[in-house]
Length: 335
Image 1 (cartoon, rainbow, N blue to C red):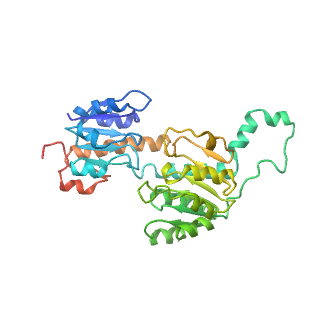
Image 2 (spheres, rainbow, N blue to C red):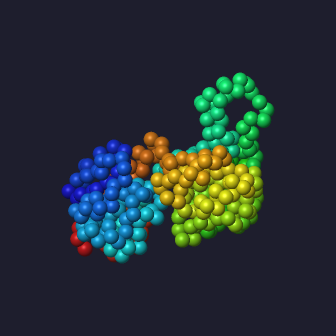
Image 3 (cartoon, rainbow, N blue to C red):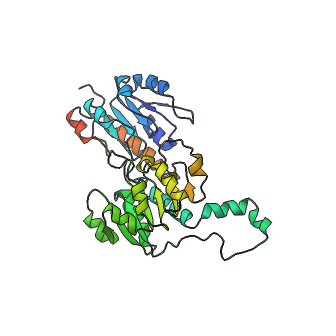
């Protein structure tokens, strides 16, 4: 059987499926696999299951003469040199759809928690400060921002962006969006308005980032863009950390140029920024947008389906680099 190396322990349902068709080896530790170990493990791997934290590039491919497919356990695949993989006839897959709802739900978790200052209130309660004050209720405590009936601006209107918009309808919100291309059907279905980026930023009470990381989206939210936002607005990032200029965001938050931010992603991961993390008007999470049992198990199953389909000589269901088919047919047979 062909060998697949998995760089982190994914849910068991995916591993069990793979064991029916592959010799499976899993990196057993919680920590990220060291680079030198990864380069050693890929030497005899026919297939590779990777996390978004691993850089899969020319060096990896050079050390993996048998490698025919990389299945990324994520929707985004900016960690993989897809162009180089295609040139070498290596298939690349990802895991869209199965985590859309979980990620959209989490965008709303961050939005609501930031708007209503939930983390501050939680700390106030569990620290004993509420009891020490001896005041049951005060009309000026933890005043936040209304959500219902406000305007939400969604930057990136793919699967996840549209799922965020669907939830916004339940809050009676005006829905604005910006993307590289207009989405007429989605506009009609969701009653969403396309806006140029600057207009969206200046009109929105809540701005949600749901774009992939590309050369065009790197630091697309910087000092200029943050100055366009309302002083009462909140920024939510469930995309990639490098979409936002962190230094500019910290400055905007400290100076009160925006009201708050909810962040699940960072410019580097794992991450610590004493200045950012010390601010009270920020809600922080360690990249857990898809962290539900259902979503993560769905991702594991899709990874397995991609690899099994490829093994059977068929095009994987979520193939990223479609042009690779012109270079090599699917399957582990030699050219």
